[in-house]
Amino acid sequence: MTQVDLESLLKRYQQIYILTHIRPDGDAIGSSLAWGRALEQKGKRVTFFCPDAIPPKYAFIPNISISSVFIPPGNIPTLAFILDCSDMERLDYMKEDVLKLDEIVNIDHHGTNVGFGDYHLIDPTAAATGEIIYRLIQELQLELTEEMSLFLYIALASDTGSFKYENTSPQTMYIAGKLLEKGVNPSFVSMKIFDEISLPSLALLRDCLQTLKMDQTGKIAWMSVDEKKLAGYGVKPSELEGYINYAKNIRGVEAGVFFHHTLSGETKVGFRSKTVDISSVAFTLGGGGHPRAAGCSLTGKPDQIETMVIQKVAELLASNNNSYKG
Ligand SMILES: [Mn+2]
Image (cartoon, rainbow, N blue to C red; front, side):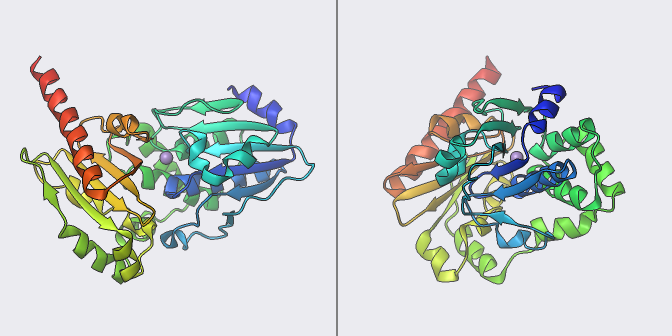
Protein backbone atom coordinates (compact mmCIF):
# COMPACT_ATOMS: atom_id res chain seq x y z
CA MET A 1 0.00 0.00 0.00
CA THR A 2 1.49 3.32 -1.04
CA GLN A 3 1.22 6.70 0.61
CA VAL A 4 -1.11 7.81 -2.20
CA ASP A 5 -3.43 4.85 -1.54
CA LEU A 6 -3.53 5.68 2.15
CA GLU A 7 -4.27 9.38 1.52
CA SER A 8 -7.11 8.60 -0.89
CA LEU A 9 -8.47 5.88 1.38
CA LEU A 10 -8.57 8.28 4.33
CA LYS A 11 -10.45 10.86 2.22
CA ARG A 12 -13.34 8.41 1.92
CA TYR A 13 -13.92 7.95 5.66
CA GLN A 14 -14.81 10.19 8.57
CA GLN A 15 -15.09 7.41 11.13
CA ILE A 16 -12.07 5.26 11.96
CA TYR A 17 -11.81 2.20 14.20
CA ILE A 18 -8.37 1.21 15.44
CA LEU A 19 -8.13 -2.32 16.81
CA THR A 20 -5.35 -4.33 18.36
CA HIS A 21 -4.74 -7.78 19.78
CA ILE A 22 -5.89 -9.79 22.77
CA ARG A 23 -3.51 -9.61 25.74
CA PRO A 24 -2.21 -6.22 24.58
CA ASP A 25 1.44 -5.28 25.02
CA GLY A 26 3.14 -1.88 24.88
CA ASP A 27 3.42 -1.97 21.10
CA ALA A 28 -0.26 -2.82 20.64
CA ILE A 29 -1.34 0.00 22.96
CA GLY A 30 1.30 2.58 22.00
CA SER A 31 1.07 2.17 18.23
CA SER A 32 -2.75 2.26 18.34
CA LEU A 33 -2.88 5.45 20.41
CA ALA A 34 -0.22 7.22 18.33
CA TRP A 35 -1.93 6.32 15.05
CA GLY A 36 -5.27 7.46 16.46
CA ARG A 37 -3.89 10.87 17.44
CA ALA A 38 -2.36 11.19 13.97
CA LEU A 39 -5.71 10.50 12.31
CA GLU A 40 -7.45 12.92 14.66
CA GLN A 41 -5.11 15.61 13.27
CA LYS A 42 -6.66 14.81 9.90
CA GLY A 43 -10.10 15.53 11.40
CA LYS A 44 -11.16 11.90 11.79
CA ARG A 45 -13.34 10.52 14.55
CA VAL A 46 -11.30 7.69 16.04
CA THR A 47 -12.38 4.91 18.42
CA PHE A 48 -9.91 2.41 19.91
CA PHE A 49 -10.66 -1.24 20.60
CA CYS A 50 -8.91 -4.17 22.23
CA PRO A 51 -10.62 -7.47 23.18
CA ASP A 52 -8.90 -7.41 26.59
CA ALA A 53 -8.62 -4.79 29.31
CA ILE A 54 -5.39 -2.80 29.36
CA PRO A 55 -2.97 -4.28 31.96
CA PRO A 56 -2.53 -2.21 35.14
CA LYS A 57 1.11 -1.40 34.42
CA TYR A 58 0.02 0.83 31.51
CA ALA A 59 -2.32 2.84 33.74
CA PHE A 60 0.30 5.64 33.81
CA ILE A 61 -0.39 6.44 30.14
CA PRO A 62 -2.36 9.70 29.94
CA ASN A 63 -5.77 9.93 28.22
CA ILE A 64 -6.01 6.22 27.60
CA SER A 65 -9.42 5.21 26.28
CA ILE A 66 -9.52 1.81 24.61
CA SER A 67 -12.84 -0.02 24.58
CA SER A 68 -12.92 -3.74 25.34
CA VAL A 69 -16.52 -3.84 24.12
CA PHE A 70 -17.22 -3.57 20.41
CA ILE A 71 -19.41 -0.59 19.48
CA PRO A 72 -21.35 -1.12 16.22
CA PRO A 73 -20.67 1.71 13.75
CA GLY A 74 -24.34 2.20 12.82
CA ASN A 75 -24.86 3.47 9.28
CA ILE A 76 -21.64 5.46 9.19
CA PRO A 77 -19.02 4.15 6.72
CA THR A 78 -16.13 2.94 8.84
CA LEU A 79 -12.52 2.20 8.02
CA ALA A 80 -10.71 -0.22 10.34
CA PHE A 81 -6.98 -0.22 11.05
CA ILE A 82 -5.83 -3.46 12.65
CA LEU A 83 -2.46 -2.99 14.33
CA ASP A 84 0.17 -5.49 15.48
CA CYS A 85 -1.96 -8.56 14.64
CA SER A 86 -0.49 -11.42 12.60
CA ASP A 87 -4.01 -12.68 11.83
CA MET A 88 -7.60 -11.73 12.64
CA GLU A 89 -7.93 -14.44 15.30
CA ARG A 90 -5.87 -12.07 17.47
CA LEU A 91 -9.00 -9.87 17.64
CA ASP A 92 -10.72 -12.72 19.48
CA TYR A 93 -14.47 -12.16 19.84
CA MET A 94 -14.33 -8.87 17.93
CA LYS A 95 -13.30 -10.57 14.68
CA GLU A 96 -16.79 -11.20 13.25
CA ASP A 97 -17.94 -7.61 13.92
CA VAL A 98 -14.75 -6.19 12.41
CA LEU A 99 -15.24 -8.22 9.23
CA LYS A 100 -18.55 -6.35 8.72
CA LEU A 101 -16.79 -2.96 8.61
CA ASP A 102 -16.39 -1.33 5.18
CA GLU A 103 -12.64 -1.72 4.64
CA ILE A 104 -9.74 -3.10 6.64
CA VAL A 105 -6.10 -2.01 6.70
CA ASN A 106 -3.61 -4.40 8.28
CA ILE A 107 -0.50 -2.70 9.72
CA ASP A 108 2.01 -5.06 11.32
CA HIS A 109 5.61 -6.18 11.74
CA HIS A 110 5.18 -9.92 12.41
CA GLY A 111 6.94 -12.11 9.86
CA THR A 112 4.11 -14.61 10.35
CA ASN A 113 1.42 -12.09 9.23
CA VAL A 114 -1.01 -13.89 6.92
CA GLY A 115 -1.79 -10.77 4.87
CA PHE A 116 -5.49 -10.38 5.81
CA GLY A 117 -7.50 -7.25 5.07
CA ASP A 118 -8.24 -5.10 2.00
CA TYR A 119 -4.84 -3.40 2.28
CA HIS A 120 -1.76 -4.26 4.20
CA LEU A 121 1.42 -2.63 5.30
CA ILE A 122 3.65 -5.32 6.75
CA ASP A 123 7.31 -4.75 7.53
CA PRO A 124 9.05 -7.57 9.42
CA THR A 125 12.24 -5.47 9.58
CA ALA A 126 10.45 -3.01 11.89
CA ALA A 127 11.17 -3.79 15.56
CA ALA A 128 7.66 -2.70 16.50
CA THR A 129 4.45 -1.68 14.78
CA GLY A 130 5.24 1.68 16.38
CA GLU A 131 8.18 2.06 13.96
CA ILE A 132 5.82 1.73 10.98
CA ILE A 133 3.44 4.24 12.57
CA TYR A 134 6.33 6.69 13.10
CA ARG A 135 7.16 6.46 9.37
CA LEU A 136 3.50 6.96 8.38
CA ILE A 137 3.30 10.08 10.55
CA GLN A 138 6.39 11.43 8.74
CA GLU A 139 5.09 10.48 5.29
CA LEU A 140 1.70 12.09 5.90
CA GLN A 141 3.55 15.15 7.28
CA LEU A 142 1.59 15.15 10.52
CA GLU A 143 2.79 16.71 13.74
CA LEU A 144 4.56 14.39 16.17
CA THR A 145 3.38 15.71 19.53
CA GLU A 146 4.97 14.97 22.92
CA GLU A 147 2.01 12.71 23.76
CA MET A 148 2.35 10.73 20.51
CA SER A 149 6.10 10.45 21.13
CA LEU A 150 5.43 8.87 24.51
CA PHE A 151 3.02 6.38 22.90
CA LEU A 152 5.56 5.44 20.23
CA TYR A 153 8.41 5.20 22.73
CA ILE A 154 6.33 2.76 24.80
CA ALA A 155 5.75 0.73 21.61
CA LEU A 156 9.45 0.60 20.69
CA ALA A 157 10.77 0.02 24.22
CA SER A 158 8.21 -2.72 24.81
CA ASP A 159 8.90 -4.79 21.68
CA THR A 160 12.69 -4.44 21.93
CA GLY A 161 12.79 -5.33 25.65
CA SER A 162 14.09 -1.83 26.37
CA PHE A 163 16.31 -1.79 23.25
CA LYS A 164 18.02 -5.03 24.25
CA TYR A 165 16.63 -7.57 21.77
CA GLU A 166 18.16 -8.45 18.42
CA ASN A 167 15.41 -6.62 16.54
CA THR A 168 16.84 -3.30 17.80
CA SER A 169 18.19 -1.70 14.62
CA PRO A 170 19.90 1.62 13.84
CA GLN A 171 16.46 2.72 12.60
CA THR A 172 14.89 1.83 15.99
CA MET A 173 17.52 3.84 17.86
CA TYR A 174 17.22 6.75 15.41
CA ILE A 175 13.45 6.91 15.96
CA ALA A 176 13.88 6.52 19.74
CA GLY A 177 16.29 9.49 19.64
CA LYS A 178 13.72 11.59 17.79
CA LEU A 179 11.12 10.66 20.43
CA LEU A 180 13.46 11.70 23.25
CA GLU A 181 13.91 15.07 21.51
CA LYS A 182 10.15 15.52 21.90
CA GLY A 183 10.47 15.20 25.67
CA VAL A 184 10.00 11.49 26.45
CA ASN A 185 11.60 10.45 29.78
CA PRO A 186 13.20 7.02 29.10
CA SER A 187 13.95 6.27 32.74
CA PHE A 188 10.32 6.82 33.77
CA VAL A 189 8.94 4.65 30.94
CA SER A 190 11.43 1.90 31.65
CA MET A 191 10.53 1.89 35.37
CA LYS A 192 6.83 1.69 34.55
CA ILE A 193 6.88 -1.00 31.88
CA PHE A 194 9.86 -3.16 32.91
CA ASP A 195 11.00 -2.70 36.48
CA GLU A 196 7.92 -2.11 38.60
CA ILE A 197 6.25 -5.27 39.92
CA SER A 198 3.36 -5.64 42.37
CA LEU A 199 4.11 -7.45 45.64
CA PRO A 200 1.63 -10.31 44.85
CA SER A 201 3.25 -10.76 41.44
CA LEU A 202 6.70 -11.01 43.06
CA ALA A 203 5.37 -13.64 45.49
CA LEU A 204 3.91 -15.63 42.59
CA LEU A 205 7.24 -15.36 40.73
CA ARG A 206 8.94 -16.93 43.76
CA ASP A 207 6.52 -19.88 43.45
CA CYS A 208 7.05 -20.15 39.69
CA LEU A 209 10.82 -20.25 40.08
CA GLN A 210 10.38 -23.35 42.21
CA THR A 211 8.78 -25.13 39.24
CA LEU A 212 11.88 -24.54 37.08
CA LYS A 213 13.00 -27.59 35.14
CA MET A 214 15.83 -28.19 32.68
CA ASP A 215 16.26 -30.84 29.99
CA GLN A 216 19.30 -33.13 30.07
CA THR A 217 21.21 -31.00 27.53
CA GLY A 218 20.87 -27.94 29.75
CA LYS A 219 19.65 -25.94 26.74
CA ILE A 220 15.94 -25.82 27.56
CA ALA A 221 14.49 -24.42 30.77
CA TRP A 222 10.81 -24.16 31.62
CA MET A 223 8.44 -23.07 34.36
CA SER A 224 4.72 -23.36 34.87
CA VAL A 225 1.82 -21.80 36.71
CA ASP A 226 -1.83 -22.73 37.01
CA GLU A 227 -4.95 -20.62 37.39
CA LYS A 228 -5.43 -21.62 41.03
CA LYS A 229 -2.06 -20.13 41.96
CA LEU A 230 -2.84 -16.94 40.08
CA ALA A 231 -6.16 -16.63 41.87
CA GLY A 232 -4.53 -17.44 45.20
CA TYR A 233 -2.20 -14.47 44.87
CA GLY A 234 -4.77 -12.29 43.11
CA VAL A 235 -2.45 -11.84 40.13
CA LYS A 236 -3.77 -11.13 36.61
CA PRO A 237 -2.42 -13.22 33.68
CA SER A 238 -1.04 -10.02 32.13
CA GLU A 239 1.33 -9.72 35.11
CA LEU A 240 3.05 -12.99 34.12
CA GLU A 241 4.83 -11.14 31.32
CA GLY A 242 8.57 -11.29 31.94
CA TYR A 243 8.63 -14.40 34.16
CA ILE A 244 9.78 -16.49 31.18
CA ASN A 245 12.98 -14.47 30.90
CA TYR A 246 14.26 -16.02 34.14
CA ALA A 247 14.27 -19.38 32.34
CA LYS A 248 15.74 -18.07 29.09
CA ASN A 249 18.42 -15.99 30.82
CA ILE A 250 20.13 -18.96 32.53
CA ARG A 251 23.70 -19.28 31.24
CA GLY A 252 23.89 -22.11 28.69
CA VAL A 253 20.14 -22.15 28.07
CA GLU A 254 19.05 -21.54 24.50
CA ALA A 255 15.26 -21.67 24.90
CA GLY A 256 12.94 -20.71 27.75
CA VAL A 257 9.35 -21.97 27.86
CA PHE A 258 6.52 -20.84 30.13
CA PHE A 259 3.31 -22.80 30.66
CA HIS A 260 0.16 -21.15 31.97
CA HIS A 261 -2.46 -23.85 32.63
CA THR A 262 -5.96 -22.35 32.80
CA LEU A 263 -9.03 -23.86 34.46
CA SER A 264 -10.75 -24.38 31.09
CA GLY A 265 -8.13 -27.00 30.17
CA GLU A 266 -6.31 -24.63 27.84
CA THR A 267 -2.58 -24.07 28.26
CA LYS A 268 -0.95 -20.84 27.09
CA VAL A 269 2.63 -21.49 26.10
CA GLY A 270 5.27 -18.77 25.80
CA PHE A 271 8.61 -19.28 24.03
CA ARG A 272 11.80 -17.22 24.18
CA SER A 273 15.13 -18.03 22.58
CA LYS A 274 18.62 -16.60 22.42
CA THR A 275 19.58 -17.46 18.83
CA VAL A 276 17.25 -20.04 17.20
CA ASP A 277 13.99 -19.24 15.41
CA ILE A 278 11.57 -20.45 18.09
CA SER A 279 8.53 -19.09 16.19
CA SER A 280 8.69 -22.23 14.01
CA VAL A 281 7.72 -24.38 17.01
CA ALA A 282 4.90 -22.00 17.97
CA PHE A 283 3.71 -21.95 14.36
CA THR A 284 3.69 -25.78 14.13
CA LEU A 285 1.49 -25.82 17.24
CA GLY A 286 -1.01 -23.34 15.81
CA GLY A 287 0.48 -20.17 17.28
CA GLY A 288 2.82 -17.48 16.00
CA GLY A 289 5.15 -14.65 16.93
CA HIS A 290 8.70 -13.54 16.30
CA PRO A 291 11.96 -15.54 15.87
CA ARG A 292 13.01 -14.95 19.52
CA ALA A 293 9.58 -14.55 21.17
CA ALA A 294 6.52 -16.58 20.27
CA GLY A 295 3.51 -18.33 21.76
CA CYS A 296 0.64 -20.74 21.24
CA SER A 297 -2.44 -22.16 22.97
CA LEU A 298 -3.01 -25.89 23.49
CA THR A 299 -5.69 -28.07 25.04
CA GLY A 300 -5.04 -31.25 26.98
CA LYS A 301 -3.52 -32.59 30.18
CA PRO A 302 -0.95 -30.15 31.57
CA ASP A 303 1.87 -32.69 32.04
CA GLN A 304 1.32 -34.21 28.58
CA ILE A 305 1.36 -30.77 26.98
CA GLU A 306 4.61 -29.90 28.76
CA THR A 307 6.31 -33.14 27.65
CA MET A 308 5.13 -32.73 24.04
CA VAL A 309 6.15 -29.06 23.77
CA ILE A 310 9.61 -29.59 25.31
CA GLN A 311 10.11 -32.49 22.89
CA LYS A 312 9.31 -30.16 19.93
CA VAL A 313 11.76 -27.55 21.22
CA ALA A 314 14.43 -30.26 21.72
CA GLU A 315 13.90 -31.42 18.11
CA LEU A 316 14.32 -27.87 16.85
CA LEU A 317 17.56 -27.40 18.79
CA ALA A 318 18.87 -30.79 17.62
CA SER A 319 18.14 -29.99 13.96
CA ASN A 320 19.86 -26.63 14.35
CA ASN A 321 22.96 -28.34 15.76
CA ASN A 322 23.01 -30.69 12.80
CA SER A 323 22.73 -27.88 10.31
CA TYR A 324 25.69 -26.09 11.94
CA LYS A 325 27.77 -29.29 11.65
CA GLY A 326 26.65 -29.83 8.06
MN1 LIG B 1 4.56 -5.68 18.10
